[in-house]
Length: 276
Image 1 (cartoon, rainbow, N blue to C red):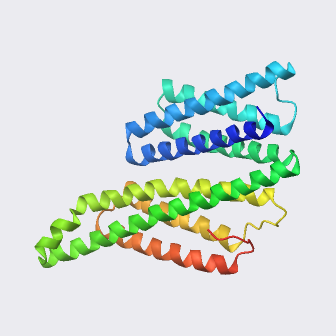
Image 2 (cartoon, rainbow, N blue to C red):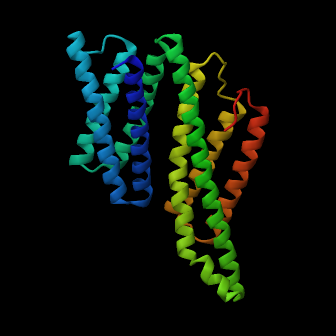
């Protein structure tokens, strides 16, 4: 297997790891055991792939790969995955598993970026390009999810208005019931938040891999964090404060308006040379 093929598998591991985090986040918010099981098996798959590479390295070098920072990151991530799998299987402490795997995912991403920066220029440039593409694609997927959530919120508000006024009974049947619209809107937000968070983490990794100066106070960075915080407030209102119905739909519409404003303004005032 060539060096590039090795890194291709590492990238697949990171994507599977990220997908596992999305499933864990969804289970944490919606208490969906199917999502929890999917997250666990994805985590097990990631750990299995990491184990194969780890023991291959040990067989080739004859030593445990922990004697430099980059190899230490990989081993650290492998241990985090092992611990989280044990906790998830025997103790069912889902929140702890989610939190430590957010750390593990960050470490794995750091290992991937650091490893590529040590390779030859052609390989490094190819990786940086793929990292940027992953960042942009994930961001757009998150934006699509938020857009669909906004659409369901608008339909909810329209349905609520028609029911209150007792008008357009035929249209009411085509729109759908209020509970279904609210639930679909919320599910899309639950999926969109971790997707945008992972995109932001990859974007920051990309920025540190390039020759461009990265500023934490850049408009794109601050705007993306603000979008995540605002949509997280909806989760807080829904799950902790038990807000339902019209207030959530209105807040979701305001959040989407902020998302659009952020997209335009950050693209104009950002120091980076791409738009997402």
